[in-house]
Image 1: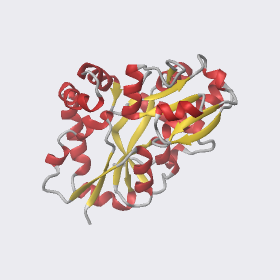
Image 2: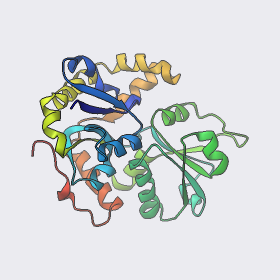
Image 3: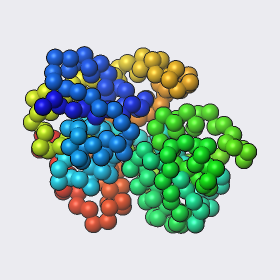
Length: 276
């Protein structure tokens, strides 16, 4: 059976897939594209074998998944692609108001709920919506966007509807203010029952090689991707440089702190790392 590699088609993962198809050209590897929530489901259901999935979903399904070390997407402070757009200048003012949640994300949704429960200490009313800022803010007091859409909207800061320009809160920055720690949004996770096949196909080795080369070519990646978003290459390059891809001990501390808050009673010993 072909090894099935999940791919999120966002700017933030481009350095990790840099020339990956060339590296695996002679291997029996296929590529499956999807937003984070789709890849979460496909990995758990066995439709793909390895993918960058929401950190919280890896923890929820730790019995069937192993985590590739030194490979993730994290940030220390503002991430620019996990943004809460609000008609109110203070997050606390969203108490008992409707917050529209992107249907593309699991970790970002969980992070927002943790921040509201334990940092802001008020309770909004959450509704999941297709990710579209205009439609979300037409029916809600705030909207959570992730990925390329969030980067574009956060950069342009345009008026929405007839109410003007919404306020914006970066959840990576809010987490740092509260904990002083990095936040890990995605982990590269492998189905344990397919780990040998993934290793034999050279996928993990290729991902590390792609990361190393991709990080050395961030300006090239930004120039190639920027036209898709209608943004300046410099904006895309700075965004990529601000991300953390290596999962340092500090990143792991932030990850475990988040998971303890998001999943009360969760045991960090349930996480298995490839190579252990």
